[in-house]
Image 1 (cartoon, rainbow, N blue to C red):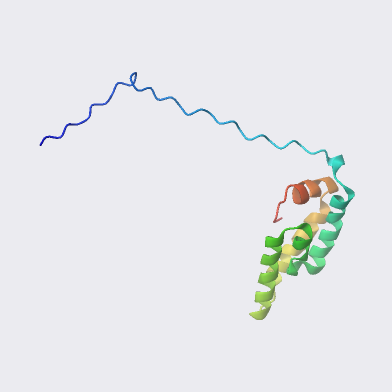
Image 2 (cartoon, rainbow, N blue to C red):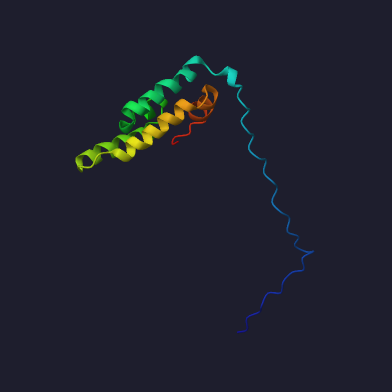
Length: 121
């Protein structure tokens, strides 16, 4: 039995065409900052104060609608208190987030945390 080695076909016989370029995803239309509602802008002050006062419990995350992040912060705080170490790290993260929330303009806050849904910092 002899094995025959396949001979390569000339490139002109089997032209390789690149796959068709897919259309890039349509970018979201920029939102006019003046179209933000008062409720969206009010979230900045309330979530900033909640982050500073009750941040270790993740209350500000729940208020902004970030359930997963809120549960993570709450779980770390509760487990940390049962293991006899204060949940200081979570409290520091919350304090920093509260300061960041309060130092942003209303439009930046809404664009980043309400519309953009940025969960951490």
